Each structure stands twice: as structure tokens, then as C-alpha cells.
Image 1: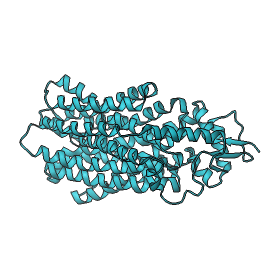
Image 2: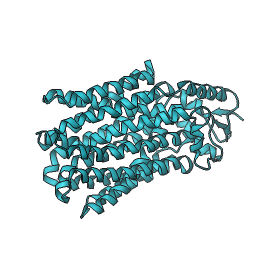
Image 3: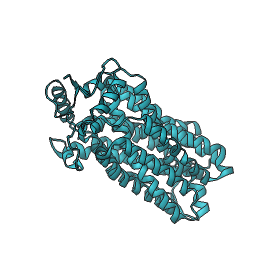
Image 4: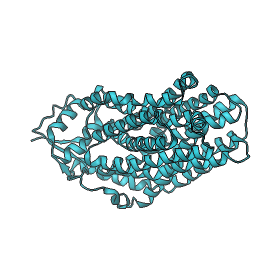
Length: 453
């Protein structure tokens, strides 16, 4: 009987059509997450007029939906390690599609809040699942860049939403944008047929035939079969219970909290900007189409930040790249509050996108690489779940700021604070513990892994 180190096979595999398939489906899923997040900010000014809402009430509705996102991250994201990440991803896409469509038919703000709340639970569970799957199935030598490019789908979704809104929002209204959210529902049969389940899920349940099938696609020259003995480093044998307590064991406690603060800071900036950027620019004198163009530039900046950051991470490390982006972000938001020149505003908004969404796109794989495989999904889900508190508070806080008599653009300076906090939290990450875990996993791969089938 041949012994096959599953983790080693994936790490050393060459990017082929199997990896591309996983990448495209993850890219597709995350793009609708970005599309959905952009929807609320894009339609907010018109929806406030339709429902007769104040700025504080509009911000509160955004915050209520993000509470659903936080719950989805905790509940759906964490349980993905037990019921299977593929199934959980399909469930998340279904929730997003169905309930966003229903939100578009809302007769009042209360109905809209309920539908948006449920849809947001799907959005909350989607992010950690997609990142965990992409991390698991990416060849090691270009994993950081692959995950970064995949996560650009989030920004592509926001750009698509902006382009559609620039052409159709004034004629078809904000509800039409939510009706478009049903599209992922029609792709689920193809997704369930083509997308692979997590290897750790199959191994922990003794499904060697499924493991062999996946490995033969990732490494066609391996000729794997059910006669082989498959082993995966630190995969949980029973996969029972939510392993949140292990996030604080083996010296991981301080870093776990630091990750939570980092994600909190990033999501506070991301969702504050996504919710209020169009309204801020409209109140600053720009038309509807012009204000929506800033949303598109923000998303473009996120893509550039993700790709550039992913490239630099492979050369100078996550820590140096992320620390620079947090600092540049803080300076950018201060500058945004002081200038009114359109060209400079576009440039600064792009940099702001790179240092918010782009930073978060790099923080996610940083977190995933820190934890062992069997608690990777839980570790990322908990970090994003706690971080959702930042996304929940941002729309409401900025809404209150806009109700004051200050100039609308002055609100940008508020985003510099979480950017600085995120940079300080990064200094508390103990990378030596991550290196210790990775070295131990490498030794296990060459000796006796903990789980096999």
C-alpha cells in the first residue's frame, strides 16, 4: 500500500485546469459578495428618498444587515469545517440570491431590513469558506498571489455594480439592482457538479475514493487510487465540535486577538466607505453618475492593492507589506478630508481602496497561513466574525457624522483612526509561532501525520 501525503501533493502540484476551475468558481462567488456589498451604498440615496429615511436611519439599516453578516460568519463559516465547505458555500450563495431579490420587492424599510439581514448571513459565511478552499487547493509556490487575484473578484463585483448603476439606476431604480442578485441561484447545479469538497473533510470521514479523484486532477501523473493510504497533516479525524478554543492554544492567543483587531479595522473602513462614499460625494456637489464613478475607482484601487501587495508579500513578507499599507491608508484619508480637486480625489480614493480592501485581501491569507489545517476555517471565520463589529459600527457612526454641520468630505478623516489601530495590532502578531506550526507540519508530512484514510 502506497502512503500519499495529500498536503504535499497539493503544495507541489502545478497550476492546471483543475486549479483553474477552483479559482474561477471562488472568483465567481466572491464577485457576487462584492456586488452585493456595493449595492447598498449605490442604492442608498434613492432608497432614503423612497422610504423617507434620515442619514442616521440609513446608516442604521446598513448596520442591521451587517449584524446578520457577523452571525453568518460565526455560524455558517465555523460549521463549514464540519458539514463541508462546498455545501456551505452553496448554501451561502442561495441565501444571498433569494433574499436579495426579495429585498428588491420591499414595500417598507422593515421588510427590507429582514430580507437584507438573511441575505447578509449568506455573505458572512461565504468569505471565510471561499478563502479556506482557495488556500487549500493552491500550489504553495504561488499561493499568496493566487488568493490575492481570486479575491479581486470582490472588487470586480463592485465595479460591475457601479457600471450597471451608472447606466440604469436613474431609469430603473434601486430595486432593479437587487433583483439582479438572483443570478447566482441559477449557477448552483453546475457548481455542485464541478466544484470539489475540502480534502480534510473527505479524509476525516474515510472517503478515500473522493480524495483519489481530486488528487488525480490536481496531479495527473500521480495515478492515485483507493488502494493508497492518504494522510493529511493535522486534519481532524472526527471533525466534531467547533474548535474555537484551540485558537488560543500553543501560543496563538495574543496573535488571534491581534488578527481580530486587524480585521475589525479593515472592515470598519471597507463598509464605511462602501455605504457612504456615493452619498458623501453627492453631498459634496457631484452628480449621481459621478459619485458612482468614485465607487468604481475605489474597487479598482482594491484590485491594484491586492495584486501589488500579493506580489510584494512573496518577496518581503506579509508583515512589512501590511504595515506599510495601514500607514499609507491613514495618510490618504487625512488628505481626502483636505482636498477638493477632482483628479486628486480620484487618485486618493484609489489609494484608499488599495489600503482598505486590498489590505483585507492580504490579511485573510495571512490569517489562514497561521493556523493548522483542521482549524483554519474556524480561525478565519472567528477573525472575520469579530471583525464584523467594525463593519456594523461604521455605517451608523458615519451616518451620525454626516448629520452634523461639518463638510461632508471631513468625514474621511475618521477612517484614518482604524487604519492606525490596525497597524498597531499587526505589531503584536507573533510570527514565530506560525513558523513553528509550519515547521512541525513539514516534519509531520515527512514522518507520521495525525490523520489518514
